[in-house]
Length: 151
Ligand SMILES: [Zn+2]
Image 1 (cartoon, rainbow, N blue to C red):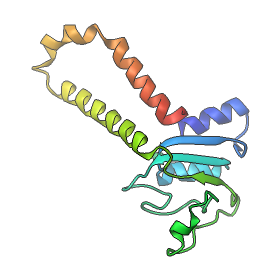
Image 2 (cartoon, helix red, strand yellow; image 1 turned 180 degrees about the vertical axis):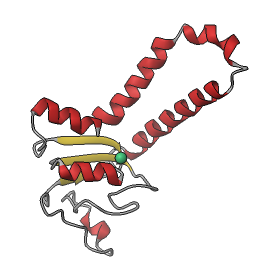
Image 3 (cartoon, protein in one colour; image 1 turned 135 degrees about the vertical axis):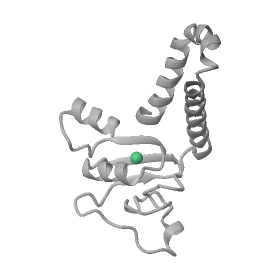
């Protein structure tokens, strides 16, 4: 969503048909809806989103996309075609295991951060140590978000 908004601001248009969106994870229904509404020309996604994926893992909102994997879906029902955006290109599962690793690292980092916040007894002795590395943590977070949204 952030990436689509930024691209629209930069290109001064809501229509992003000449763009390619790279994402680590198969888009969820919300993002897939935004991608279709913004007419994003090409979507490249990495790891499948087994619980909430809107490109076939959970539900299917995208057309086949002409990535050569159409035979994979031939036994299932035909993919939907968006009335205003029927010809988007989709590349699925690009560097899937690397993308899955990035997602895993991101959530591990988030969980660890939450644990630190939830444990006030452990906070005072660590406070000094943490305060020495805020930039490191921020850099890491920035890098992860950069990879997630703007790769
Ligand atoms: Zn999403």
